[in-house]
Figure 1 (cartoon, rainbow, N blue to C red):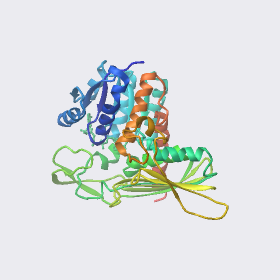
Figure 2: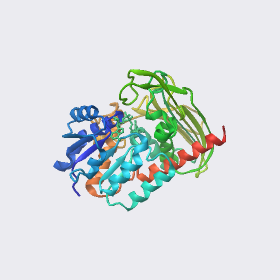
Figure 3: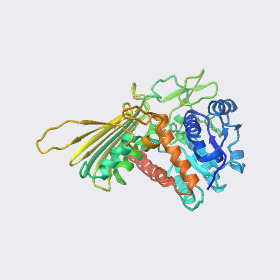
Figure 4: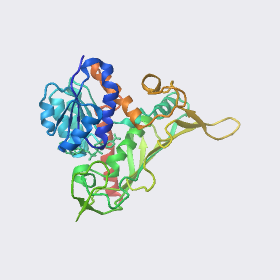
Length: 380
Ligand SMILES: NC(=O)c1ccc[n+]([C@@H]2O[C@H](COP(=O)([O-])OP(=O)(O)OC[C@H]3O[C@@H](n4cnc5c(N)ncnc54)[C@H](O)[C@@H]3O)[C@@H](O)[C@H]2O)c1
């Protein structure tokens, strides 16, 4: 099933990751996978991204992209509050759609997208790029092989510091109406999905706590992109979504989980840390050291300690898709983002569902995020 006209809608921080990954892999699908358009309401941002990654055209109106029959593959990289509307419009027009996380601001909206996606003939998915980290996929394989025994506990922390500077401008990210919950919906989405990926369904949110540590920010004088500094006005606006969220969960497999999401954890950068404990062993990983995971298995003689397992061409995705697929050569964010996009394009080309980060996965994650948000209000 050939496809034509790849388009990135939203030329901000993550639009660049999509554009770069399409650039890397689209040609493997033949002349059909052409880099068609970058769309952004800010024409300069669209032009810059199109020039950087070789997209042919730019556009400022996402509705024109949806109406264009030459465009068949769409990445939705817009602010959170636009995801539902644009994804539904793209699906209605028969496009293949990869929507950035979170799929929607709340579970009801996410369900509406999931229902439409289920009936659609086109391919769709939610961006859960952290599933594609080879070490995380390898840990999942160890869990499924029973190496860690019965699941007991999972700790997932997504600690960032992109909002730690109070002089960063106010933007859509700091408004509940536009972004939804703050750190929770932004990076907690990845934490929830990683937990579901490794331990399965969540049975119950036991409790949660949320904090806003920087309660107002100055308005920008011009356009904002990502987490960059811009000139600030003297006017301020209230921050009404969480800077930090922590939650306690119980899984249907009986295990317990602890999730922490922060955007103000000074020094953390953009760090996902995962630790899974079973009756027979523990595995752990951090994005700060993406070349390996560590595993400790209970031994009959009582010895303890972790063994480091380096990435290798045998690790998921590296052998087939890695740029330098050789033992212990390090890989990073752009590469595992590319692994995800490659699979999405493969599904578009073969006309089969994109299962590893489906729209349904996006919906399930938003349901849990809703529960966590409710618990944080109840437990305040
Ligand atoms: N998967 C990940 O790891 C990851 C990482 C970062 C961001 N994200 C997600 O990606 C999305 C975008 O985040 P970002 O950091 O790139 O934001 P950003 O603010 O850097 O970029 C958003 C872009 O959308 C444009 N835009 C806004 N409204 C528009 C409209 N109506 N029509 C056309 N263009 C419009 C803005 O001009 C801006 O260039 C968010 O939903 C975020 O949660 C995902």
